[in-house]
Image 1 (tube, rainbow, N blue to C red):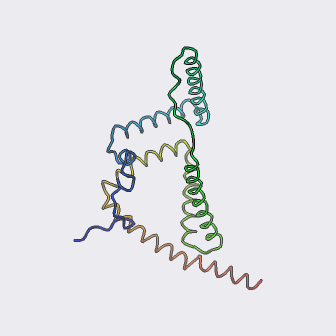
Image 2: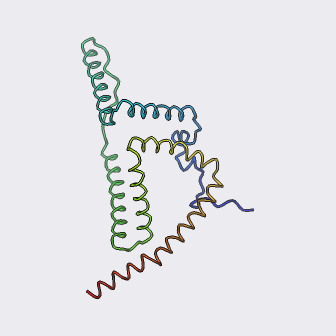
Image 3: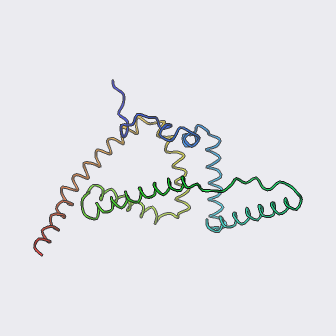
Length: 209
């Protein structure tokens, strides 16, 4: 028997795809103590926000105010007592880093605009269906939960889904490939039965007008 077909025909392992470093180890529970610590701290923060009524903006402002106050007083007392200043790194954003970030943002925005143009002009029916389903899903999820809850749920998913997928990779790939084929068949059917007919109807209306 040949090797099982992997999703997206990938050749690398999940650990390699995730970068193979500390982040991959945490997401795949290879550093269990660190992963559990992150989940615990995040859960405690979420409970604090929910119980105390703190907002993320007010909490961040208060933490930064406390941090800057401590550093300011530390620096002033160090100057008076002839002690070393706070061991802070030199904050500087290099021009190369800024150019790389702007290039990535530029390419991403152009890709989004190109896809949006194709959808708006009716050039890509499959992408229209995908984007529509994605936006509908986001709308439904957003109406059911707050941003804070979504953030915590997203973190839990990030720290559980890759680990579960790595453990049951063969079975999940088989179901996912079957599901992708069903979705592709559904998209083709929708395009043939509805979207293409609507497109033809619009063109006929334009000709008559």
